[in-house]
Image (tube, rainbow, N blue to C red; front, side, top):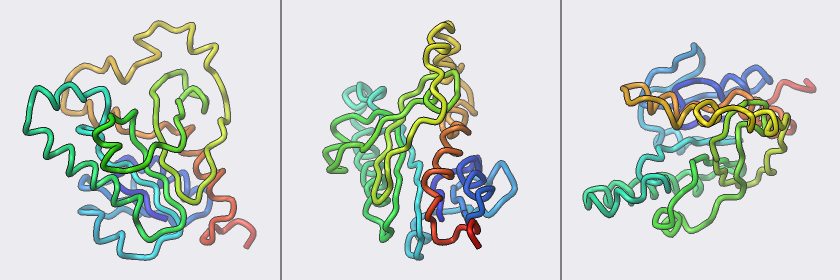
Amino acid sequence: MLVACEFSGVVRDAFTRAGHDATSCDFLETEISGKHVVGDVKHLLKKKWDLIIAHPPCTYLSNSGVMWLHRDKARWKKMIEGAYFFKMFLESNCKKICVENPIMHGYAKEIIGVNQTQVIQPWMFGHMEQKATCLWLKGLPQLVPTKDVKKKMMKLPDSQRQRLHYLPPGKDRQKERSRTFQGIANAMAEQWGINFPNSLQGY
């Protein structure tokens, strides 16, 4: 299986631990030793994969930044390119696909042509944080929450519940915000890997 646009290795390694042959790809080197390709993911999409999980950049697609489209006309071209890059994964020749992004604005959705299948939160998977994440699914069931800690999380101050939102500016801010929560990665591997052809389970 292919984990596209991932440098952290979190999702890749969750599937690897579950017995799957998982490869990640990004322009950045992997932070954790494992099967990883540095470079443009487009050439990898020409190969046959049983499962693709993609995390395309959200900089110009996220609803939280839509106001900047109206303040900087140069961003429109980048938004359109980003939306078609996102759409490329959905249209890949693979039966099982998940493409992940934050809440998306309408301009990008119009290009992509389909709404998200599911919206999940870290607190559904044991993390005391909130960060709405949308999943566009093809040939995969919706993720089932594994540990709902919302009641406990809501007692925390906003700065802790939305830790990623309050991260100070810096060169690593975008990297920190792009990491998949471990609980979500584990749920993907456990729930989507049950009947995965390359699994070592049952052999």
